Length: 639
Image 1 (spheres, rainbow, N blue to C red):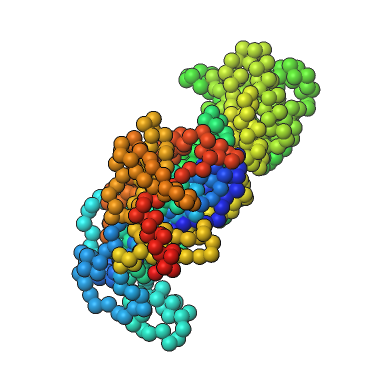
Image 2: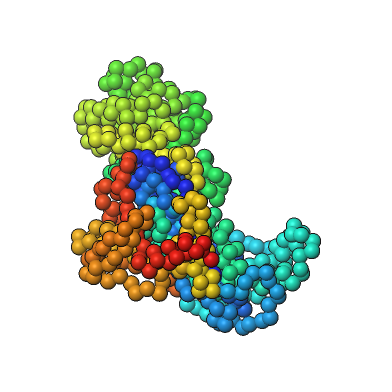
């Protein structure tokens, strides 16, 4: 059996572009922008980013019962592309019952046909996608008391991908799992059916997918799954669950990156607003993949290698009343041996000079805030950061910060930044930069001029565009709610559809043309011009010879009534084989490598395709043979 995952709901236009990765089964969907798709509620060009991870319970099958093939592809949406995120997977010839290398054993009767099947994951709207099988070390090991001896479905981080592995003693469903199913299914269900379920595993599954970080456009399979029909069918929900949200986040992040431009530093700070702990970890991981620079989520740094960054909290500052006395206010110079200095006393001396320069009374700055800054500076003299808006930016936060920063500077340390979390962020950043420059000139501390200014406070696409405009003094932008909750598009319409059973094509016909599927096991190719520009993507049946560079090719653009010809200078195959017969075929890329590919993929898009509003539509075309198959099945009512 063959099936594909696709998204059908269109996305709305928005001023940012991004992409989603879809590793094994879930095609990313573009953000709400005609040209950019959303990754986490944001629009990212006409496409998106999707990610799929390996199901944690895949197991080897001792006796495959037919093969099913599945494919993921993006559905048409307002954005032309998406990011594909997740496990690499792709299309492969469906395994037969005799193709398994594991010893065969008698199988219990099953209502499912014992045929080869293929399924695909895709998005109906235009999208960018890449798919890669989950990294073996992507999730922390979790003890499983019910299945202590259950082997991992893929090699461990410390295990060679090609190392021989013994057959699994049991399938993906444990005895308690089967017992629960028996308790909720009709009481007259044949007992042999549950025996059949116990014998299931994923040793007959083959996956082809776009590499993680690639662009995925509407209709192009993100992931293709082949294997036993029942097994491939059971994989639908877990694959879609794993792919959709991660791809949405990555696409949204990519869109926000396009809005911010390459110079601004973007921090993901949305863990408190995320959809639970798992959703928070996914958002932190894939916002980084989509183009953010770091996350405040320490777990994402520990488990996924995401760079972490952050500042101090308002609650830290307000916890100080000003009467606290440090047990050790002495600080040694940064350069090495030298007399230790009472930092608190030094700060008070600098405060008088700063207040005179700013025209403030020395008693105006909040003392509790200043004591909090001193405590933080004593703990982290080389990473002092000031949060300025707890009481008053101009009358308290700024002078207190300057006093502590100048006192640290006297000892050879340099403050690393300030943050604003309320008010007109752009205007305040301009004013603060002006003060930094005058104070730097007044006291001969040139480094103060370039202290980074970070901002946060429910920043959406419109505010981000404002903060990123030319002449802005904002250096770092923290985004939380609007990257992890995807408010403009809270879900990604990836679908997983059967496209072939036993080598025979299958097609879904419906009154809604956008929901019709493309039949048969397919191959996908990207055609490029001599300058490396993207011309179009071509879908063809798997048995067709691949397009050749320099040769004329006749294709049928989707939605068009007539064919056209194209002569590509370069041809790139899109779907790669990642898992064959349940075994990983090659090492998976690191998160940093997938992120680099995503950024490179975005740069390959023409400016017209990256427009945040009304972007140009990227063409996806069918080969003549595939178009003829579609016409035949449509006229005959499919199979």
